[in-house]
Image 1 (cartoon, rainbow, N blue to C red):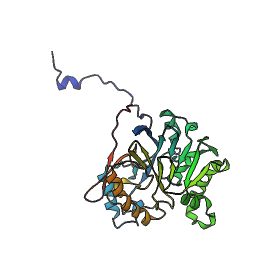
Image 2: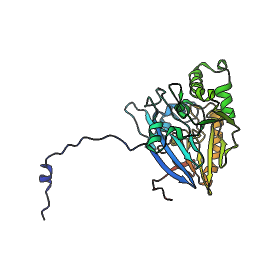
Image 3: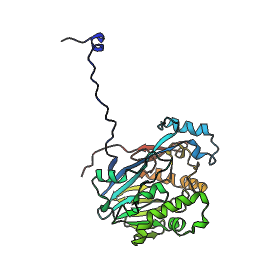
Image 4: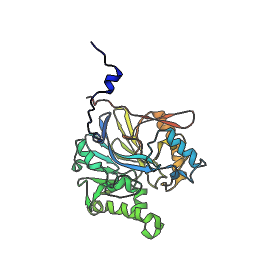
Amino acid sequence: MSIETAESVNSMKENPVPMRKTQAPGFFRTMVGDYEVTALFDSSVRYDASMFSGFTSFTHEELSEMLRRDFVPLMADGMSEGTLSVFLVNTGNHLILIDAGIGETESPVFLDTKGHLTENLVAAGYAASDVDVVLPTHLHFDHINGIMESGEMVFPNATIYLAEQEKIFWLDTPMENFPEAMLPFVKMARDALLPYRRSGRIVSYASGSEVFPNVKSVPLFGHTPGHTGFEFSSRGQNFLAFGDFVHIKSVQLPHPEVGDIFDTDAETAAQMRLSILPQIAERRILVAGAHFPFPGLGYIKKEATGYRWIPIEFRPIRN
């Protein structure tokens, strides 16, 4: 048997093969007791350390170093690239969608002009018509606009459940009571919900109550007035989808006291993190963060100072 020398290897004929540069469909699945939880990739987001400016004593350079230290992907223009995911829970009795992505919205914050929710929903084996419940954690456009397309319901058989405080703020407050900078965002939320309102498909609930059996709403106020998480329980296992409760993990897990520009009340949001993160870590429950690296599922571990993210590992679904 002969072994080729480096010289002979270097003289080998080239074999150029076109790169595919595609990904597998954007879904990831795990089980929580008898409940099937599917993460669905919606879109890519761009941000930098300036979103925290004014809400912390850390300098821009110190905040940027937190992102760099966490290996957050950098774009050519120096901005960081993140993701937005939504979550689908099949309880056996309901197919529940938590948040709905950006829909057709164009925004400089997002790299996509249309969310990928519906295509990844189909790739995951479901149709939009299968969804009967939508639970928005809050009504920022990147969490609600995907329920509507061209004025029509994307989920024609779904009812939208809103926390009372969120409904009052976004839907019931007169437009003239909002500062001018907020008007476009309020209009987007109202437009997205309009076809469901016309069909009587919006129900409000008290945050902190049980929305469905074994599905409890969890008040996580601050990011918006009625920002709410959802805890699912099945056979002694628990899963908490907490939206933007922790917005950017690289900064707000090691330093939960840091707020950001997208918070309606940054101080309240920070106090919520300081109060509730210890409980999540102690209980060792599976959590879902909307802007955590896809699939956004994992665990939060208490460190000497702050917290650390432990992402879920891939494994087959077994009966």
